[in-house]
Length: 292
Ligand code: ADP
Ligand code: MG
Image (tube, rainbow, N blue to C red):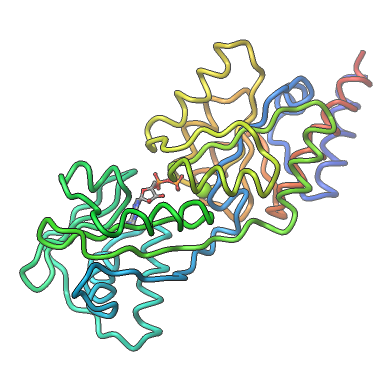
């Protein structure tokens, strides 16, 4: 009955756009107790939008956006795209940046109009030894509202903040509830900062949050959970997520995600609906049950 059960499970999955790439995945998914979910693009829509530009005293909004957009036009980060789109929609002419440098998990740096412009998270500002000063309070408030706060430093001084919103997917909360209902603990994993991550986690019903995780450290976080005896699936969409997908007992990719994530995963959710994670577990459990 083993091959039959696997055929049935694979078929049930296919009907719902859940692609099990191998029989082992169908079996392993049955015994999970933990599902780690990437925040951006997995629990959220991955369509970031600029919602506020705050500036230091004496600095104009358009000036900040112009410098930042110049740097971000050279970057491939999803946040960069949102910032360039916002500058363009405001009719800002974006100058050319030189000496561009991407700093993974931190941000990006380049020279624009002869000035050194650093764009990224708090970690990047710390690295650059730039204090946020008068902008610190606003940054805190925005993060608590669930915004990703991009800091801007020009020639070693804080010049502004760009608040970016990325709404939770419509079914994210339902998906988390469905996992809890079948006895699985959901965990959020993100490179974004703790306050922003906690807010989105609270919105969708996740208590366990691993935030401020560098791209190269995501797999190690999954391994730590496994070392504690947990059976772990990782759900992700990004290039950053691929090593964690490979490390997990079951790697699950969002269909709308990057090719690398899809190739690395054991299971692909073709409808890009996080609700399908719980469905995949239920199909796996049904399959294993039939095998006994
Ligand atoms: P994730 O996709 O999980 O949020 P990343 O490691 O890609 O994680 O990024 C972590 C954080 O680094 C982002 O949330 C952002 O604050 C900052 N960051 C990285 N690249 C950029 C960039 N090009 N522009 C602005 N911020 C960036
Ligand atoms: Mg992502």
